Image (cartoon, rainbow, N blue to C red; front, side):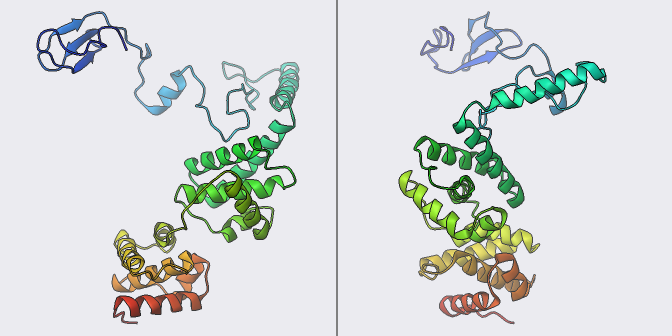
Length: 306
């Protein structure tokens, strides 16, 4: 902030509000229009861009820092395309030289065992996230949890894949994009039992305190996979809120309760889905859906016409 902006009030009217007018390079009082300073510096770029593609092409900085790459994306990269800065194909001699440079670039990016561990684990997290269709923020959270585990030396004696999968499971719960251990195990290279064991260990050691998963968190995903409207999803959430107040969700699997609420809401809103369809999406049995559905109807006094 410039020295003129550090002034608490306008010298004319006493207002503390200032506005920067870059077109005229002026700092102006927002209340009375008094020009406090007439030579402010524009800190923005000297070029203009009219769309995102043009902005990216003209920008002279790299991608933002990310925890999902072992060196946080701060090292340089040699492009895989064999073209020069003008877009022309490289000569065979130059191509061979670039190939050698690219090979050595890959080698020097990973300097020691810790970086090699991170590079493998974070690529594993990225692979599992892609299979599960998880958003960017979940990947970043998983990478941060795994890095903390490495710093605390919690990886020793455990498989890298197991701890990476556990970090991803914890990140999903933390970001309220829940995935069950079964779903994580399906895309992982280790068993569900090992992921659960690794998750309990790192959550205890890193003091990660996560609340039990709420059935409401599953509604948007189940509703989307079943092709249900927003009205059905809202009705299901409403039913689950009522059920939570009456203590009907405690001690029961969140996916089963969410599936039952989705089924009841689909019947109420005239977008009926079969119990088999709902059970397949929620990865539970039809019996579970039926039992949870009967409990909700009985305790909430619902009259569902089948």
